[in-house]
Length: 350
Image 1 (cartoon, helix red, strand yellow):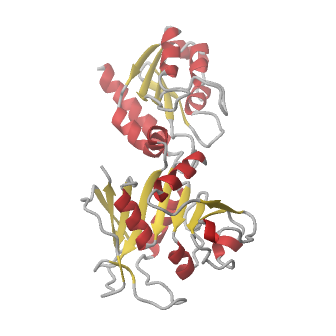
Image 2 (cartoon, helix red, strand yellow):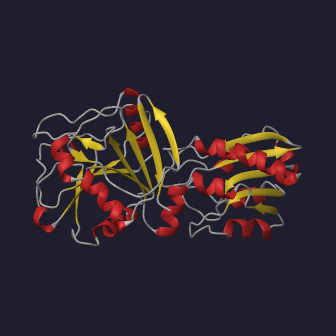
């Protein structure tokens, strides 16, 4: 019976945690509820990076603190035990004399990683772990990947025509084929808002002159990253001139151009180890979720290297007959949804 009840309240923690999507990175999404006599008396979630953690918000929401010594705290991720942007939540729980804590999954972050649970148990708190563990880990798959694989979680995204092309054959300056509609465009901007960085290659930057910002969905715009090994992208490109942060990844032959702030340049060797080197550079910058939007060669290089975690492929109703072929892979869809006139397939690299 306790396990069933614990599952119910942990599901509420997951619902709350998801409200922080797109706002908390590089921290994880976390939800917490305080329960007394089978009723929720306080709940909260981590609202933004540097702000109070979920446990703090849930405990603060309790109207009568005298109930805390009779309560159970549910939290989707192990309470922290170290001083970071905020004080340790494990100490708060101990100080509030909460006798029982139910944890969805442990935190792989080295400064926590079991220490939070150990601190609670040392103080005499009963701790239950692993309730809806798989769901709790999946919610924070980008955070988990960064902690365990020391690289960003990589999402590949492209839109393709009904006959498998991502663009028509066109001359420089001609507009790209319009595959996405108004509804699926909003979906794309929501995905951008949930990402820390967005990456495109040289040809895409030259042909489309994109802004790569989040305009159709509430939330922050990701850091824009553009590859330009030889310095071919015009200095007048939007990515360099609109005043938004851009990271230019170039080679020795493309370095040294004078570009306005806030464009930052980093030099990497464009060889067979380029993708892991790029991901290592981004991990050092605390980028946990990288969205790769194109073009076809760049997307295919990530697929061929194996350095990708999911692909979200929009298939529209338009047929192009010829043009730039969509990337190829051998995965089956794990999930399918629909946006406007488009079908969106989710693939996982497992």
